[in-house]
Image (cartoon, rainbow, N blue to C red):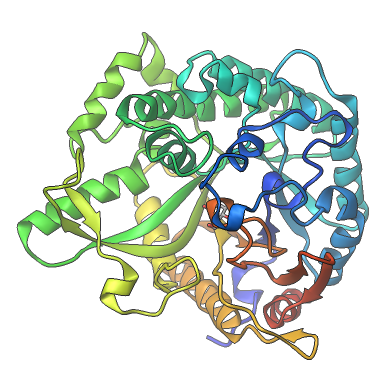
Amino acid sequence: MGLTKAPFGEEFVWGVSTAAYQIEGGYLQDGKGFSIWDDFVRKRGKIANKENGDVACDFYHRYADDLQLMAGMNIRHHRFSIAWSRIFPVGRGEVNQAGVDYYHRLIDHMLALGITPWITLYHWDLPSSLEIKGGWTNRDIVDWFGEYVAFCVKHFGDRVKHWMVLNEPMVFTGAGYFLGIHAPGRRGLNSFLAATHHAALAQAHGARIIKSLQPEGMVGTTFSTSHVEPFSNRERDIVAAKKADALLNRLYIEPLLGMGYPTDEIRALRKLEQFMKAGDEQNLKFDMDFVGVQNYTREIIKHSYFVPYLRAKLVTAQERQVPTTTMNWEVYPESIYHVLKKFSAYPTMPPLMITESGASFPDVLENGKINDAARVQYLQDAIAQMYRAKQDGVDIRGYFFWTFLDNFEWAEGYHPRFGLVHVDFETQQRIIKASGNWYADFLRD
Ligand code: BGC
């Protein structure tokens, strides 16, 4: 296809995604409280090169210029997240008015520039005071989260009509509460299962609150996804791939659709029952207005005796000697087509949106320019794969590129660059990359 946005239709939403901790900086500015990421980056050996998000892109101070740049690139939709601890420094109770005012300014600025705000309510930066009480392993978090969500809708809902409840619950529970490689750095099946059930309850509870306060609002939530394939046709690899698929792609969407957790594939998930109370099964379910699918790569899976619970492991992209990004993920935009098909095959699935898709490559700054041809290609291929799914009948309504600015990539620090706009973290200078210019042209009316 000659790549234009016309065949996606007038209503199709094109935008970019960002997240508070990855860009804002101002980590203690104007009364903000500590979050689990402010704590985690201070622990030894957790983040590459001992980096942190204390300053990041300094978006907290530079948002006006950055939004101007965004508008100049014809980007009309911005998915960003609210830092819970900027609004409630200790998670609940006392409000930090300066933090609320910052988001008022941000939203007003976006609207003045013709950019529609899409708010993610939770992109991983839990207030530390709530983690001390158990964080996502404490069932009370469902109510704490609900209070925070209600506050945001009541204060920003006069201008904001598009909401995403959680960002990738599988990643923050898996990496944060099972593997310990993301904040808060906890490990083990029990903390993972508790966090999983409470996050799944919170995703429906948060959505219910938004809808009750703003019936006309558009409410969704987002999921990490990977197209999963078995390494070989051997039965045990096929079984291993099914288990990995249940964990990576089904764990959170199925309870939301009212199907319960995928316990048939992964027996260890049956232990989720110890956290279930009467009425939970019903409360896990919510009819979202849209579902956000986020995709970066595919996974090839093989059987392994040595991996507890799953008996499955990844065959890495390096082992397979395929092209990779700086995250060591296989460059595989076809994955977008497959995950869209997979999600749309659930009979009660609402319309889909790609709420994140992108790639980190080793950008080279030459004569003041970044000719990131690989990212341009990735973006074009991703859009083409989305179009392929659309032509197959998938109800897809939007695409948000990850991400606008190079930023703090969690445990990997600043090395992986995902932006359409290059950031010099010493000087905070911004340079639009070739990919940014390509997207701007693509989006031009
Ligand atoms: C997250 C982003 C992250 C991106 C690239 C997604 O899992 O939502 O915060 O930067 O992937 O790793």
